Length: 394
Image 1 (tube, one colour):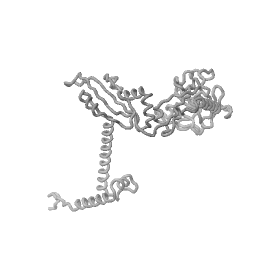
Image 2 (tube, helix red, strand yellow):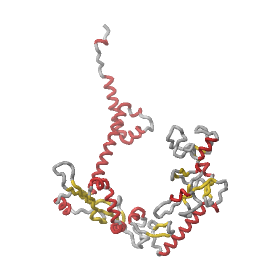
Image 3 (cartoon, helix red, strand yellow):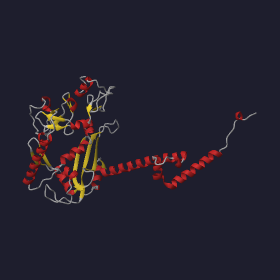
Image 4 (cartoon, one colour):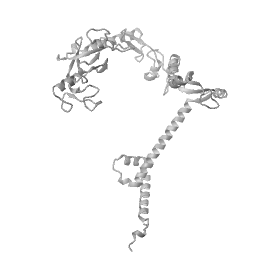
């Protein structure tokens, strides 16, 4: 019984079973034993419809509807769920110390700019009242937060970008931290004026390119064992798609360490296990990749293996295209064989084979296959039958 949540324990005492239980509960998925009640929720759980009209109450008296803001978690060996009459919510006041919450939850808080402390709730028969509710406190806190944002924007003469503005819940203050990497994902002002810098954002697009130099000692048991191998992959793109040159140039100025870390992350295993040395060189913003042929030749003469990222990308795309074509050809061959075996008109109407035949083969090819099928059938029918002496009546 101790493995079951309080709701399940109560229902079992009342005589209910996993085959016979009231309408306001259900058996959740996630069963790990033969008994359906052996699941990650500890047995029965409330239905969504029933929970929607339930009312819970925090230690400080805030009322909460069962279908909003109520959370579930496992923490310090306790399952904090409505079925145990102890669901949790994030304290709307962001209090890090409160005698009204369960002491176990004192250390359950978030990090970074978010100040997250959990409060446990109890079910109550008290009717829901918005004026005494968790929802009202949250809306009041959000209104204060918006007011502070408006004051923050005013203090900076309007030069604030929403994507770079952060609210610190510990200090309850707004701050601004410009990050071109964020601009590359969300900026909608291409060709307009930047809200933060008050400078135009170029319509011309490009990318950030860099070179990756890899050095390691050869250890393969060959005649070259112990020699240093140096490879340089040139023209690696930072962004998957082209971005405004204004953003690219800002990324080169402000995000060099982030670019280096991203490049090295690809080789984490080799760096850790084999002592590879990975360097990031020549970080630059360009409209398109440029190549220095003379430098490539000089590097090759010095024993450095040179490869360009765009060549690798092109080769990978061609290989993927070839694999797709081969896979498609095999599907077509299988479909044609089926038509030769059973006939096009034997395919069920609206079946996937019928749809693919019409799409991939076309009317002319289907007619050819039907003619070939009839020819094969005729050859089979006209093939002479060889009799043995045992088949003859003497």
